[in-house]
Image (cartoon, rainbow, N blue to C red):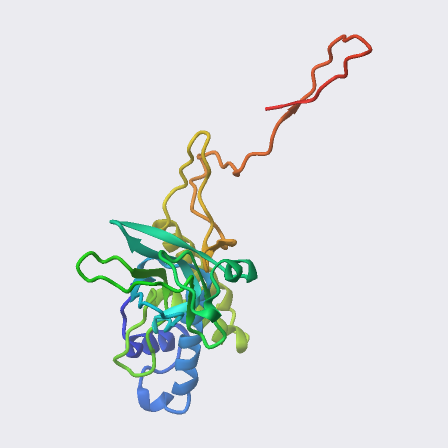
Amino acid sequence: MRGKTLEKLIDDLRAETRLSLNPAHNSNDRELQVKHLQRTQEWLWDDYDWPHLRVERNVPIQAGQRYYDFPADLALDRVEKLEYFADGAWCRLQPGIEGAHYSMRNSELDEREWPPRRWRLSENEDFEVWPISDRGFDPATQDGQLKFTGIRKLKKLVDDADRADLDDRIIVLFAAAERLAAVGAKDAKLKQDMALKRFARLRGELQITRRFRMFGTGERSRSRFGLPIGSGGGAYVPPSTPQLTYPLEPTVIQVPVDLPDNIREDVQEF
């Protein structure tokens, strides 16, 4: 269960590794125990796009502004999409700004136009919108509102009252397996297997079974900065469900036919 305090995680870790639950007996090792728990949660966070950590953050467009501050609690490399609101609908901005775009509307010359079409991160970890807008955000209509969708950063896990963003059991079990393996304990593999089993079950419960449309495309993989990349496992599919990979490769069927010499034999693709 997520939302457990650091104090509870430490107690559980000590129990799983057969250490004394008395804080006085672990004072010299507490800092390392906390580091193990922090690092384990960070690894789990990085390994999977946890749905409950997917957030939306708004940034209002300002007339004549080229660069904007990136949302503080949003992970730079876990952005899934950026949209802007105009005429009652959300429209997607495409990632990447290149020389060809500046040839059309040169931001260095303060050339402006509405609506925005593209965006990119800058070296200062803020982001640029192209072209520069010639109008600002309208609170009455919400036109000119930018909306990021992505995975937020983990909250701090330093003080006893701080709460974990992810499931306490997988954090504790993976951390315990690492510590037990370091001392050659025989049950290190058991703890690891328990953690892997729970991790797989949680991912299966959180993901939606794949659905495919005839003549359409299948499920899109995880996207960062709006560009599709591997999802690191994909959606859970029950064993009885046929698994298809999209887009389908064309099937080549060759049918031998007696043709006159001046007519070539074609290969038909379906």
